[in-house]
Image 1 (cartoon, each protein chain N blue to C red):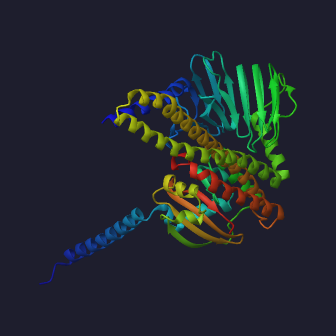
Image 2: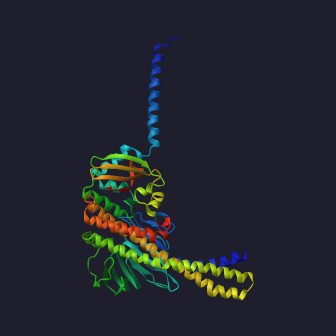
Image 3: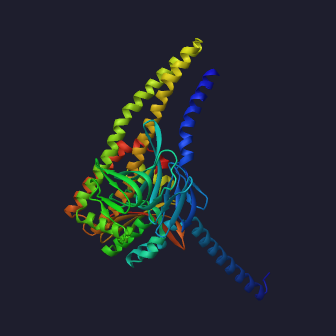
Length: 163
Length: 343
């Protein structure tokens, strides 16, 4: 039996809608499961903030306390001085290449420093979706410690480098 | 069961010893601006609110635009300015618990109207000051230096083994790691913390190697005190165990008179001394942590930003070498005295 032409058009339209729905569902669920801190495009947006010298935004996105190499910077004013100083000095991740994006685990603190303080910081202050991002740039290798999110950006918990 | 009763009695005595001064020295938040934080001795951090209590062991941490006013007892006022870390600490001295109001970094103004009992001591990472009926401001610089400005009363400022006495309208600057300088008249002069602090940072950057060495020396002082107290604590702990066994023996043998005398003349004084030694070891460990966090942390930021594009510079490498030694010393001597909640 052949279906009337109108019915075929309706069925085709339904299949397209279903396909679109599945695609959107897949995209939305993918976004929901991959933390912002582990999405390459979002990490790029942080790198862009450094390259643009957007101190205000960098300070806004920085967690306090903040990790610099293996030092915990505990004052908001010191974190602001850090970003201002780095940008004034000319820090930029030119030709940055993201080498790896690793969710932080129980031993990740050692990448910043094999110390009691770093161990406690990673357990106590880092967001649950804490992520270590390694980037290569013209200035050398850097580690970014990211996690959580704020206005679509990952928050910055720490910075190490150049290594 | 009886052993438990004895233990409870001893525990109770110790509790009374510690609870008395702690209650007397707590401060209430009577005014605030911005979003200052309270870091509790238990490790909890939360936003301060009107009416919150700041207890010994707690720290008030202010951000760039914050301000906190505390009231202690009947009329003592403590004003904590922006970008400041103010901590209430305890130390044992001559068998009494002494409160130390410590400014790790930043600026705090004090007005002590009616001090009942023993007067508190004021401290910065490198200085201590005794006070008598005083209104003064303490600036604790990012490089470990300090500035004391007295409005009224008497203040004895002590650092590196030297002391200077200040009275109405006098001030003194204490360079990081050094003794107090010459006292000066400050009333009528324009002095603000951020300008003074920036000058200290600029001085530090002139010679960051000497600057970090001074901080390392100060850390060594705290480590020395901890190292001196640790064997004493271990010895007293062993002795206390032995004396507790003796006490238990007297009790089991129903030698009540000997039991009471031993408890009063041996056990309780020993427990008191052990507690004092532990409080003091803890005081030095937390002072070392404060130095590490707020002084070393800020100096590291300054050096890192100054040399970020020139990390093979010899000055930077020398700074890093001393800094690395400082970290090793800290891990070896201070960290064993700390708990996760301190970080």
